[in-house]
Image 1 (cartoon, rainbow, N blue to C red):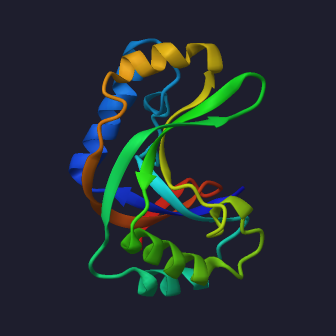
Image 2: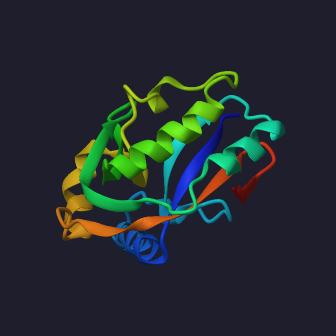
Length: 173
């Protein structure tokens, strides 16, 4: 199973995304709110690999700057999926601080086995997922449920965590 390094959102941005999850859920649509596991939190994926060794965690923690960067959520993105479905997400406006954080952490994880291509600097699209497996025909309803899809939200990265789905554990770096 793929392991990841993720930027968590500050409390205000986190609450804003969870409100959008709730709106989708109230509209009877797919939503990250349906995932009730303790690991489910709004986040921006920074690095993903087949395996991230325990020895790497100390280096990752050392690569996280004391002053975490600003984070701005932009408009809604739609990523194509399979069988007429898609992923609905909030875009993350790229900043020098976010790019630096991404580069620092990816530099540490880069030699681990199976780093996925879509987190490499030339392919990374930072985003916060709102819903998986949304039928493309339901996009108008999802956008209506979100109401203010174009409004940007500003805050900061609230922390950086590791996620190991095999162990079902997350921990802050």
